[in-house]
Length: 302
Image 1 (cartoon, one colour):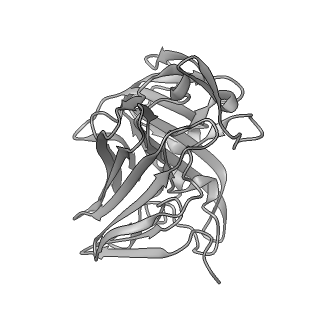
Image 2 (cartoon, one colour):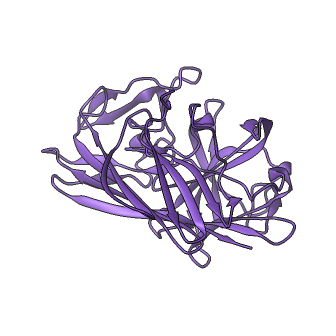
């Protein structure tokens, strides 16, 4: 049977293995020394909760699927009907083409064509490259429009550490600001985490968290914005480039895993805040023919 995520690209280098999908350029599996450090999902299913997919040309939500460009309202397609928003960009169901491939690396490309609410033409790329203890992911974009284009990017990995129950892991997030949201998960304010239950800089047990929100003002500690630590000391670290200043954290208690359902946590690096097409927070405007690239990564230590 043909996989709903298209062709599966297997990467291998030293201790590290990964599977990347044709659709959404998703990271379907990442292991180091045989230990799962992301939540894998079977080849024959659609990525649960967007597991591993690329979010471009914006991550997270656009409130009411509407924003204003040069005084003119732009109406995007509503892709989150239950909340009336446009969710996770325009490429989450699109196939990517292979631009370059080696045993331990692959570069994929996809074009964002002008469409409802986004009248721009962008060529985007994603490069996955295995490292000694994890992976480096580099996103690129080229504005081939004849006008300035707004752009942001993110990704949606769920993390784990082998067979350790996710709720027993400790999350440390080096962010000093929380983005408060309304009942539709759209931003309404930014508040310091200091002195609140959302201050995760000192570490919190994952099973004690119920989160679906973004954090800003990320401080990188040895290049890492966040880390998950197991009781036995094993650790997964999320790396971000300095201009990736936002992280979304999403916990789910009924994530399909290991033949059943259980606790899972997504830690999503983003270059812009939720609803950035309206707020401008972190949004990058690309001039005609301008290019940009940047990325994130994962490191595992035993």
